[in-house]
Amino acid sequence: MTFLSVRDIDVERASSICGNDLPKLTNSTSISRATKQSGRPLLNHRQQHHPPRGNDLERITSARRAADAAGSDQVLLVLLKADYTLERLQVWDTLGMRGTHSEGFTLRARAAAEQIMPEPYERIHAQTMVPFAHLLWGSVWAGIAAAAVGKAQAFTRHAVRGSNGQMPPGAAHFTQGVSTLRTLRGVLAANLRSYEGSMSDEKAISSLEFQAMITLTKVQASELAVTAVLSSLRACGLSGYRNDTEFTIGRLLRDVLSAPLMINNDRILTNLATTSLMTPLPTSISG
Image (cartoon, rainbow, N blue to C red; front, top):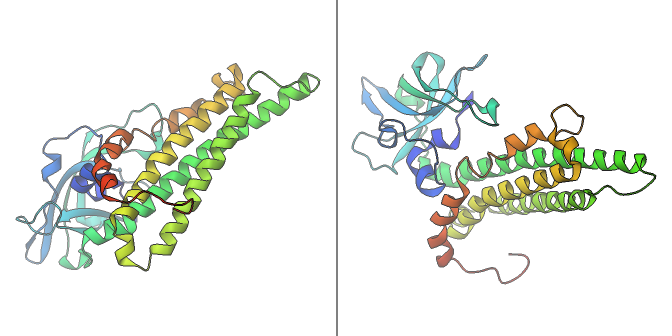
């Protein structure tokens, strides 16, 4: 089964809450309408989709519950391979994160009414999609940061051995990279514990305070990951900048730079300003 990205799963809500920074494809923010004809919902969805790969059999996408439904009244629809067609609109040619293939397609589908999930998407979005997506993204970025810091450590050890125990000029940046990586992992671990502690409490997990916290996880993790990789690059110096050394940081840097941009951090922070005014400030180190 192919699970689409946050932009695919909920176009309008992701745009308003997370700050979708993708180019606006023709009428892409007013689509996702499912209508029932002969018991089979119809869907014409123009947005970012991943192209079919290998043995992909199913996709999940969102749709308005009915043609006259509000934009926030959405459902999730499971599509089998025979239910849909994809028409390419644009290619994915980027600095990094090339493997995500977030290309533009028009998705046209016809499926059985039973393929509409009974749970309202509003609950799925708040209780599952956002927490899982942000913690997963953060974990991926932490992995990229860890790989970069690992290269910085290997370079520093190599330099020390070759200079009779003298630290290289970039050693301070290696230390900073290690510290930033630990902070990043601490943020993810704390927010994961918070999510696990709230999973069975629908009121708590739907609260403004929790939703703001889990959304800011994306901002914190992405910024810390970029800082850790840049520190590692400076620790390695030219050996990290070059592409032909064992200490090269190039690909890791290209990939991690997408983190603050894909679902733009500035827009997230701006959209959460009102929520932050309405929620109490932490009164202790436990939150």
